[in-house]
Length: 83
Length: 199
Image 1 (cartoon, one colour):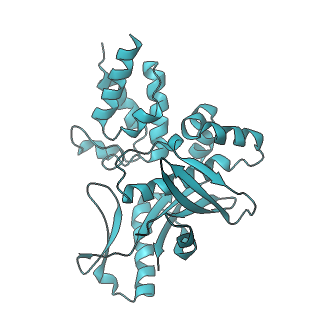
Image 2: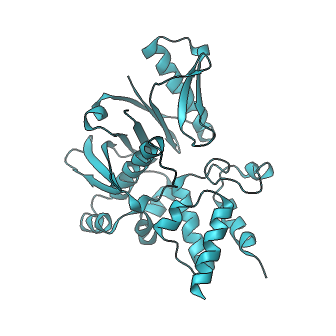
Image 3: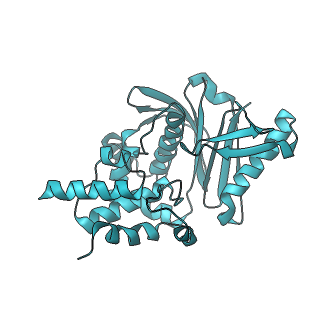
């Protein structure tokens, strides 16, 4: 079974304008600074994540998302709340 | 301390049009009041774009004031008088902060400038340019701004660098390798680049 990170990577890659960025990024890149994903596309990412994991990401959670690990942590938390 | 922000959005871009006409997307970025206002005034198809640029511009100022949260557009409440299609003044509320805005609307883009003091908005110098190579938005934004700074402040071009703070991402001007206190803001979306500074 795929883990959370495996599922979010294709979503993030879909909204990365310069795909070459992925060749050099760190293990926990910042979505805006490192991956150059603008804020309008971050909303797209949130909607796709909501669909993929059948969860809802509220405003407060959105405010705490900076890096890929933040995205992963919020998804885990929301999935736990669902159980 | 006066802080400024600016934001531009293309009204012609397919992805923008698709997102800003998707009710689910709109419910993520607009407050309930803004969403209802838009539904009552759907002939103003540009409203979600307008609200977005106001929110982004305000966010850029709050980052300069020390906010360390990521952008959550729904937490920014826009209040704007749409009485003149060329210049629309308003304000944005976030927590206890009030940021003042002025927006330019035309058929191609919406551009908003913002400041944390009402009387500072009219003192913002800004430019909007259309570029051909959208993969070089960042380069052109900096290059156009540098040219303007050379003219306005009579500084040698080779001495000016437009840099970004590594931690906050806030852009600043370096003159002769020293951080300048000229307040700037940069933005770009698709073929449009814009910049603003206090002069």
